[in-house]
Amino acid sequence: MTGKLSLKQDAFVKAYLLNGGNATKAAISAGYSEKTAKFIGSENLSKPNILKAIEAHQKMTKEAFIMTKLEKLKALEKIIAESMREHEEKGILNATAAIAAIKTHNEMQGDNAPTKATSEIKVFQSLGERLTNGSKR
Image (cartoon, rainbow, N blue to C red; front, side, top):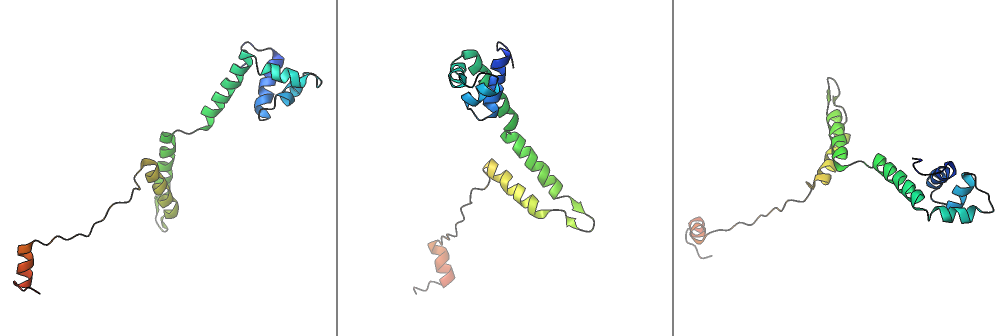
């Protein structure tokens, strides 16, 4: 990632990323004087090549640590398959883990929406008359 950066600038970028974004501390870690560290840190953050290097590192880090939805679903499917394996004597190895993974998988897919149950019964007049034998009660 040193592209167009000097060695000190590259060290600044790495220190800046590692210390959580403190430019003054990054400048000191990179070897700049403590007296000028605040000014140099601020100045470095205004340089386009340094900003691009910081953004490139952040993007690379973000992509490396974020699982896609598909990767998460595949991982859950592996957990489900392993958890539901049957042992000769013990039965299903880990039913609780399988159920939890299935539930999470369903939630990610939107499959947990409650189903609407209705218990309406419509009785047609002729059926009603047949059931009550014409009684007007």
